Length: 255
Image (tube, rainbow, N blue to C red; front, top):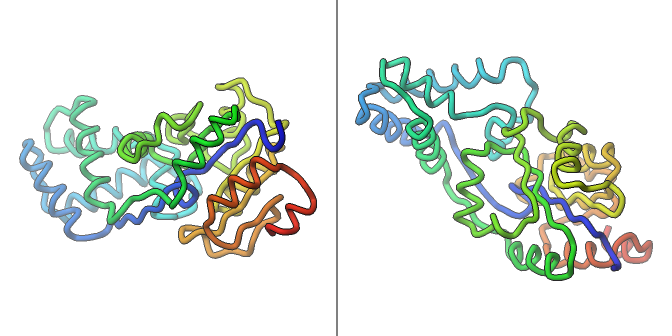
C-alpha cells in the first residue's frame, strides 16, 4: 500500500464546520425555561452565571485554548448540568443532566455542517484498507450526538474524545491513548488537523507525520512545520496526500 496506513483526523475545523455562541441571551432564556419546567427555577442571567462558575470550578487551573468549538475538552460536562438541578433541590439522574446538556449545545450552536467532501474522504480511505481514526479535543456529550447527526460515527475505525480521558491535544498522552486503545503505531501514521499547536505540534511530538489545513476555524497563527501544508480547505487534496504519502516532489507541490 502506498501512502499512509493509519489516518488520524481532528474533527472541528478539519472535517466539520461549526459556530457556537454560549453567551447569546436567547440561549439562557431557553435553557432557563428548560430547567424551570423541571422544577429548577432560574432567571436567565442567574443560570448563565451559575453554569460558567460550575465549569470554572470543574476545570480548575487547566490551561485551554479558548476556541468556541472546543467546549471544555478535559472535563465531563454532565456533572455541571446535574449541579444546576441539585442547587435548586431537584434530583438529577444521568439522563436528566445529559438531556439538559444536549439542549444547551443545540441552543448555542448557530450552525454545524460537514466540509465539502468530508464523508467521501473517509469512505474512500476505508475502502482502500486504511485505518481511519478520530482524535478530537471535544466534549463527548455534545460531540457524539453531532457525529450521529452528521452521519460520521460509522466512518471511523475508532474514536477518542478528550473529555472521556481527561487529557487533550497537544498532550502526547492523548495520542498514546489512541495508540493503546486500538493497537496502533506511529509508524505509517499521519495526523490531519487545522490547529498548529494542538494537532500538528502534538502529533509531531508523538512521532506522526502531519497534514495542516488552514480552515475558517484555524487559530490566527503562522503555518506550522507540518509535513504538508494546505493554505485553504481542500479535502480532495488531503485524499491525494494520504494516498501518495511522503513523496518529495508531491510535498513541494502541495506546500
